[in-house]
Length: 255
Image 1: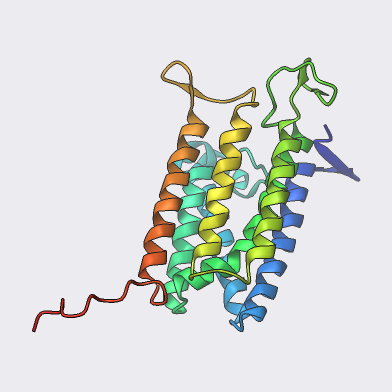
Image 2: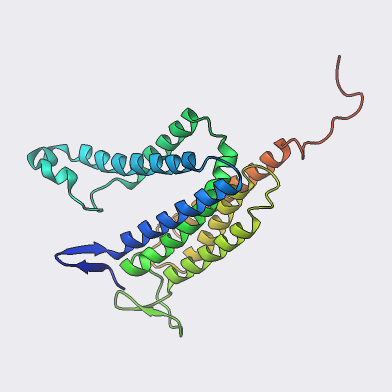
């Protein structure tokens, strides 16, 4: 593991650097996809920035609000660069809300916009696999295998490498299939479904899974629900697409 990158008197978390790099690459990929589809790439960039700024500020301010008395006593702590003092769930919700407001204001079509963003999301998903490899998070269950890695005083499944490999495979599939989408929104739903399948597989090798109801891995259950929802939406959007809509039966229209 390589958690910190020392630069003079500053120590940068390697996992954060990896996420920033893959975010930048993903954003560039999404902009190129927008150009290919002859869509305004500046609006795609603005949408991502709205989500990021809203999410980061929201996550930070929500955390500050929870411990307001502490920060009132030491106000400079509000702007401290500490990734442990954020509220990730609140940041995600606020970031998505900011993106929705931006898209509504700019009158962006939801499904085509999601398809444009999907290759960039697939790139960022690779970073989500690599980042824990640096920090030691998302570690695997103990295993005695030739490819096991030493982590936290045990030989373990290299689940971070598994996740990175699967995310890379998903990106390749998305990249190759982006020009053959049967209906708007298909590429995004395919990415969601493939990512959910990957999560169901990966959780079987994780050593830090949250177990519910005695033996059910919470992340697997959530991924299964996401997969079913993605497949259901895929069918609904396919049938709703004008090209795929069934032709009316002659004589069935009431006058």
